[in-house]
Length: 482
Image (tube, rainbow, N blue to C red; front, side, top):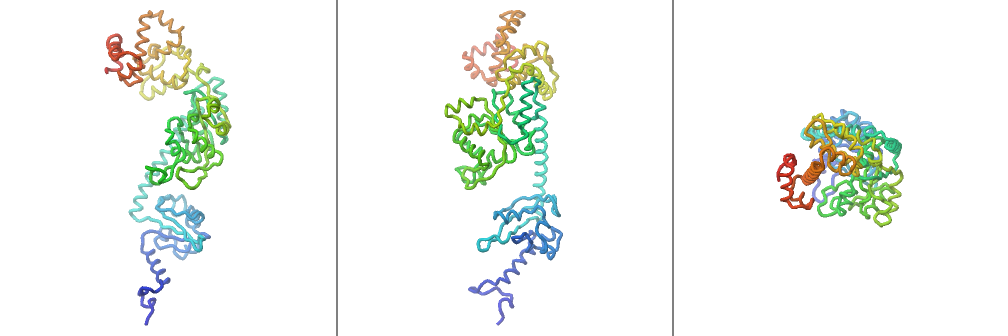
């Protein structure tokens, strides 16, 4: 009686598996599929490869078996898979060199263990006509993404550099010099100063002047995130970490900033529990996702900013002293606009130039405007100045922006200028202008909503309507009805 090997029949039920026949069948399967298969041993030498992959690599089966995989595929990830033991499924890979240079392939990789020791790794590569079509679509999207990433980085470097920070006062030049020196290293920076003094602009400029400029700049406003969402937003989470968690998990801001800069704005408002976790990240340079079981090494540079008195918050028990010392390696004190009056007019003209460019206008300031801008205290600093310029630009009826188009609070906070203005037009006329200005600003703030504006001004809606329609028709014509 002939054996199953001789007849070609499969072994009878109960008989042991015919290893030789299974091997022949498996090899046949590999040779008829359009997918590519390859296997390597612990040293990285190719121990099996199917015909389809040989054809793609333009190499014979016999020659491939004499090669280390790095010789055939220089940027292979199989060595990493073999060392780490990880399994990758349907990963889109772009090859940067070798015969596969420029190609996108969909790959799956894993390892084989014997007696608890990894002895081999194998990969499946899909590049059938349909897969190639999908890969080409991915390639197009990836190329577009790379283009926009480069454009964003170019835009960021052009608009957020120390050269673009307007001002020539000695205090500002000194601050820019310190920040530029700080950019050369990876030490943590703490930017302190009033609202609107340009903390984020400086953070961007420091990043773009550093060796990390090619990597991400990730911003998190600590005051804008609800406390219950803060941990997942900053540290990310794993799949199933909580009800409603995204499939596959989600990276947090720290993880997204890996290799680059993490800008923590309004750091004084960070919840205390998160301060302890952030301190650990800064100390250990490791990150634990919410619901995760392993720590991930991270490489970030932290720039923090606040307009609050952190020493006071430490005494109140609202900010950790150890985190403060960790963040305050390099401290830069931002300069309020009132402390550099010579920079006010150039900055206002810069904002006006931006508006002219955006709206294709050619407006300029009347000679009476710069002195008023310079004499105002600007408690909101650069942000308030920008708002004032936008206001004047919007409500100026001619190409020459007169002082009457400025927000009236600039007059109200400058008694000397306000008094001179009253002498020229008469008190009643000036008071009428002031009232009109207040109505304009309030209506603009509440998007023309009469109910909200009346409540804010503590007057009846009917009174507000009468003032707008009767006493100040110009206000109504500019802002519209109710």
